[in-house]
Amino acid sequence: MTGILSLYRSTIGKKVVMALTGFILTAYVFVHMIGNLKVFAGAEKLNHYAEWLRLDMGYPILASFQGLWITRIVLLVAVGLHVISALQLWAMANAGRAVGYAQKKPSYTVYLGQMMRLGGIAIAFFIGYHLLHLTTGSIHPEFVHGEVYHNVISGFQNTLVSVFYIAALVALGVHILHGTWSMFQTLGLNNRRYDAMWRTVALLVTLAILVGDLSIPVAVLAGWLY
Image (cartoon, rainbow, N blue to C red; front, side):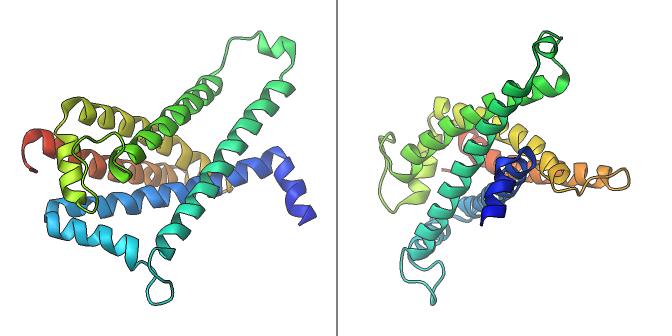
């Protein structure tokens, strides 16, 4: 345990934590996207899937709601560790930067780091909005508990809401693209022989998530889903 804590205190340890938690979160976003696509199969399919997530995920090993809450706890821990590690790495980088270096013209990596931090803040805001909109229904005027299909369709029929989701999903895609590539670097999987392959994997994963998620608000706005 002491060795693990010592590793975490180092820069590389925090980067490894960010890589692993980033993988967990990206995997969840990918699976979540696949589940969301059931909206194209109709109300019955999507509502049944949502009910399965709440009541039967993990059955017969887990009781009703346990699978859902275990997933939520894992995600909460992953998000917490991801954010804390990112903030600590940022603080360590600022503390270790010499005055002379700080006065130099910012490099591409500095700009990229700033973009990732701003993107992370935007994504955090989006997650909060998404939960209040389609999970609790607190800010969804037509929300009906248990009627997931209705909530999704009626929610995205508001043009401003759909535009906000589209913009947020694009920001999420940019974050995932850079984060996935950085994960391969941190875990030592990148080299000259495999760089192109890992870049392609990162791009394909990002595009799959983007196209899948964006297809829903676009389809609602276009009148293909109603």
